[in-house]
Image (tube, rainbow, N blue to C red; front, top):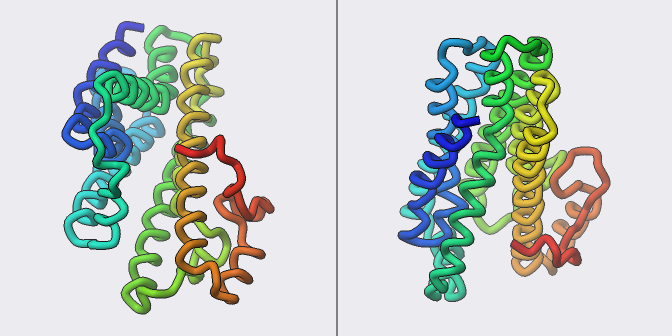
Length: 267
């Protein structure tokens, strides 16, 4: 399990960008950490790397690098996003203990998210039986999740260029109100599937499950913040009311239309 310590050290080092501005622990630091961990996993287990796991590592590298770059450009180019990012409550200096706890939590979470690939390859390196079919299913699901995210972001950008004052309800947004978050949930679900193919130990299941549950919680927390923000902006728009009444929040065809009242999702 020494490779986990290596991955954790990398996660700590890269996510440390959050010390410049604590929001970066969850945003730019997140994207860069996932990219770095994907590369590190591929290097550590290069001798036993399989094609489907290589695809997963490549997709996660692309995802993380794209996310970090997208957020940096968005911060520079979008006054509205910068206003949200630098809200007064976000710019207040956090106590040192709080900063350390956020750093530790994020570093552990990112390793947990990436752990299924390393567990699968580690069991393969030890000569234990693994399930190639599970790895291929995982690769397909991960890729599908990333494609959905990219398409959703592109559709939102196009819609906002057309009418910046209107909420987005076209393309994938006809099916679900947060298709980018759904894409990310799908992506990490695909990664988690690797555990079934690796015949993980109890400890490995715990690590991977904590990472998976943690990121799903983050996605629903983000969807809740978006829901509250949109309610403030479009709450009196009858068309918006009709849209949110019939369009699921984050999971297509699952009738969850609001999580605003669930304060435990406050991130």
